[in-house]
Amino acid sequence: MFENRLKALWAQGRPAINGWLSVGNPFIAEIMAGQGYDSITIDLQHGALDYGQALPMFQALRASGVVPLARVPWNEAGSVMKVLDAGAMGVICPMINSAAEAAQFVSYLRYPPLGQRSFGPTRASFAYGGYDTGAANDQILALAMIETQAGVDNLEAIAATPGLDGLYIGPSDLTLGTRNGRLPPGFDREEPEIVELIRRIQAVCAKNGLRACLHCGEADYAARAIGWGFDLTTVSGDTRLLAMAAAASVARWRELVDGGKAAGPAGKGGC
Image (cartoon, rainbow, N blue to C red):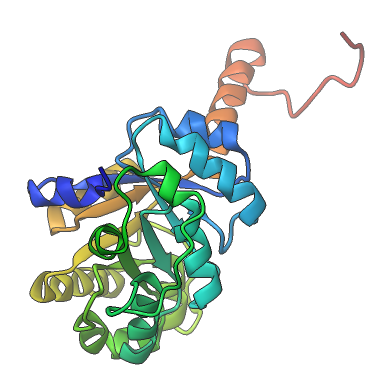
């Protein structure tokens, strides 16, 4: 059955945890998919991958039952339609700055008469039983990113866009865009005015019947956001998790072996 399990989860009043893939490798995708996420996003905007790598990553996600999402590079018809044909069940689109841009984005995800998506679900038709245009229009999620001052200025109009399913907050660009670069980019913002803005976006989502989604760095912050009313939180991603686990392992080794004094390899010997 062609069903988006994120939509089913939300219909039950339950929040979702989303994973993030930036490395173009299906084995990494398969490992991440087995860890209990509700959905996982393949990042074609800033990730170190292209469509040729993303396609087998979608295939690797299938066995776990995790909902496959994709962030496209830009609000462009070909990019959006291509990831949908590959099997994405939702698309995150960056830098949506106006209601017109939001409407354009939505049109790329929907088949006529609701949009202008062309028909050619090359992999999707095999990956999902019962695939048809009506089901696709109903089940595929359109998530617009709010991450600029223009997006904030036009927030209410964007949120009122017919066919839009939710707003996705990118905290790094949101901070850069609304603070004129006075603060460095990063997740898990604690500045009162940024927290207030994040919560305002969530409130606008609730008012308009949209799902509110937030990109987070740590599970504790993500849990706070769920308490604020967010429906989906992304917690870190493959590159950050790998770096954190490796750093913790090395630090522990150095603590146990030499009290943390060693700065690096001894420079001698071999296997």
